[in-house]
Length: 530
Image (cartoon, rainbow, N blue to C red; front, top):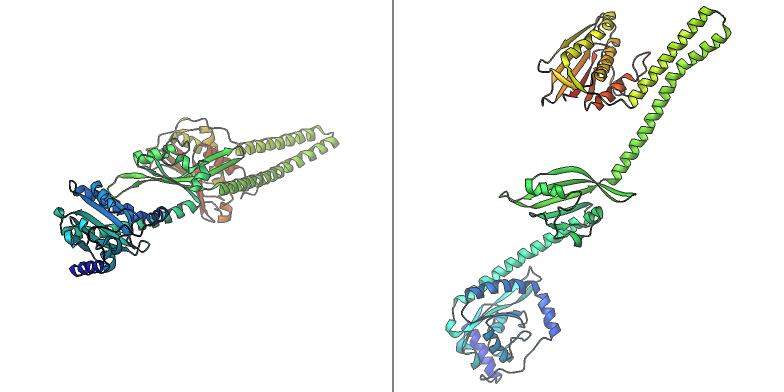
């Protein structure tokens, strides 16, 4: 280091430089050029300023000045003692000036850039006498990972405050700056990737901090909500009508939400349907950092589903209408035939017989239409408290005579914990009678039918099972049993099970069936207790 300083002083003597004054001639950046350079080094200057302020606070009470130069030696910024600033400014040293030997003589900036090593020049080691009362320290920096930028950081103080540790301090500062810049670049890249992903994904994204203040609101969220990002960013999320309350619960009670269906209507004919997911963001210490929500637009899917459902409804109506027409046509044909016979016959006895047959067919048609109406829209259940065991025993007694004709027994196994249930006894009896009758009809002779009850695991539901050893059904037949006018019976209409399903559905319950051909069938009816 001493050798480099002496060689520099010799060069100054060889140039015939006057040691008593600094030449007024020097290279200088224009105002525009200086701003361009500052912009190029903007992030580096910001980080240096942060560390410089920390160092100057530690050295408070002593005159210190920190200078930052670019790779050519031009001063870009300075921090510290205003007295020092005014002194060197009087020498013509200020922002935009190039620190070189031809202008400033022997100086730390030129030597640090030239030798790419830390340099200190103390007191009379300077070539110019007016700098003889200063101690200067300088380290070069080169940040290849950060736009490959180079330059120097220097500290200037008075000779009496000279300290060899300043070079180490500057070297550590340069290392810290490099790490901070590397971290910032990593964060910038991650933020850039995050923004690219967030802003280009086909989901709406909203993020908040722990107070519910919106920190992210991507383009798809703008489209879904109809709100502009600039108008909602840094504002509370809670006033949003559709999802503000969910954010409140997530942030206050750490609740998570999945597949919440939300509808956003913009006009009478424009509506978006979304699935909404929300979860709180919690760090490893268990602290709430914020909340993350996404909207998945399912408008197209909902439209298609509704179109499909409507198509299914029209198809079902067509099938039901065809079935009803078929079932009505047969008795109607008979009625027409009997009327024609009545017109041709004068026999009073035949007249009475024909009228009786016509009345029977009309009653059958009336019952068919009634069943069809019940199946299409069963009445609302009129629930009341019912003693379940007595109710089931009464139903079995009602069906016993039908079973005896097939030499079939009906047995029952009751869950003793089941006593009272809140049901519509007339409608549920209609279901059980229909299921028992189907079981009886499926048995040739010497069969059994077992009815059993069971309390649900949560004590809120109960189950009634009806099992038989009849002819059973194939998988194909089992899949169609709820379709109107489908029947495995030779003379069946095919409305009974459809009516049963609708009654159980209106009771907020469900009915399932299992069957094996030649083995038998089991129906399970599950209903709420209250």
